[in-house]
Amino acid sequence: MISPDLLDHFEKIFIDEKSRGSDLASRILEIFPAERVAFVDGAPLAAQGTLSAEQFSRSKKLLYVKPFAGHFFKRCPGASQKKTLTCCNYYVLNLGQQCNMNCSYCYLQSYLNTPVMQMYSNLDQALRELEGMASEHPD
Image (cartoon, rainbow, N blue to C red; front, top):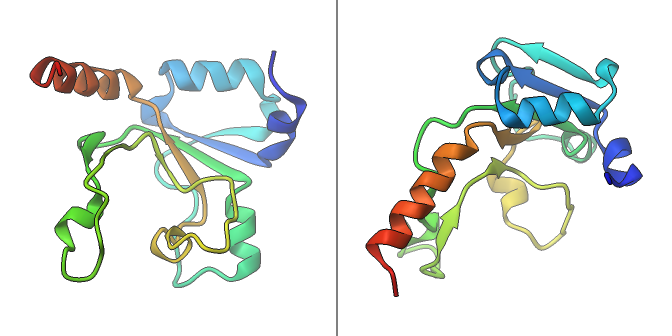
C-alpha cells in the first residue's frame, strides 16, 4: 500500500520520453493521478543561478524521471577533492539527485542546486554494477 503522504508529496512528475517504457515509469503511472504526470523530451526546468529558498523548497515537490548516463556505483566525490574535503572513502550508489528533506546542515543544498528532484529509470544497470562489484570483492 502506498502512503497518502507520498501521493500528496509531488505536485508534478515529469518522465523523460527515453524512460517511457521503464519499470519506474510504469509504476509511477500506476500510482499517481494522470494529471500530475507529464512526458517530456529533455529536462523540464533548467537551473538559472542559485535557487531562492522558495524555489529550493518547491524543487522537492517536482520529480524528473530520466535515464542516467554514467556509472551508478562509484567512490564518494570527496575522494577526488582531498585538499578541500575530508572524504568518507565510501562507495556511493547514485539512484537519483537531490532529496526530499530540507536539512539545514546539508552541504548538498548548495552543491546540488537543481529545480527538480531526479530519479533514474535505468535501475537494472545499477543492479548489474552492484552485482559486478560484489563478484570482484566477495569479502
